[in-house]
Image (tube, rainbow, N blue to C red; front, side, top):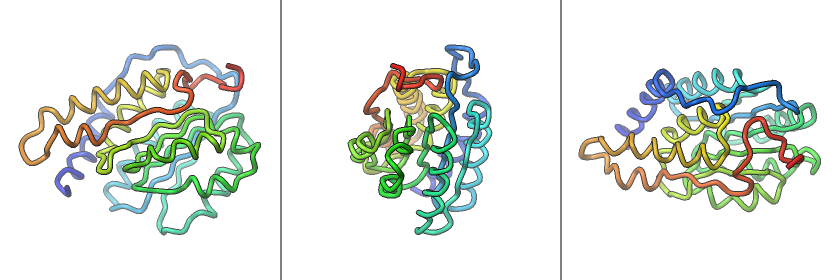
Length: 222
């Protein structure tokens, strides 16, 4: 698994340079102000640096404001709460990217005031077996939730493909489907020892909630 992890995070750089999804619609000024909030958990420095560079660069291109937090401890709920509170108080819609192993940030978000929670639009959770939180996130106010049902997901590969397509104007459903296909194509040619079929299957992501929204949409108007 360590060899796979190195391959996955090296691939992030390659994807960032070579994967260019078709821009389905020009990114014009949004009807509402939108912000993005991303959390990276406390993994090895190489992984943290790769995730930060790719994520910050792309989020800053498309959102009115983005906030990227790297967790250096298991108990940073106050920092996460305060960051999300500020964003939801100052922006009409907030997309959340949970770039962390098995996590329960949903518990921290549940403490936000209801009017703030209602501003959370799309949530992506890279954690293994994180799709089981779908109902919790949707009940809290999120419009759309994307996550992985598999117990051993190589989600960074999916995430790179998904983020680029979401930012290019794909709907949630289109971005998920396209990213899943590209991810499977990435693992298929890999040699023995990687168990490509099993990895691709475990890494499949699923959407829940409103999967027709795009980065430019205000779900409240739909």
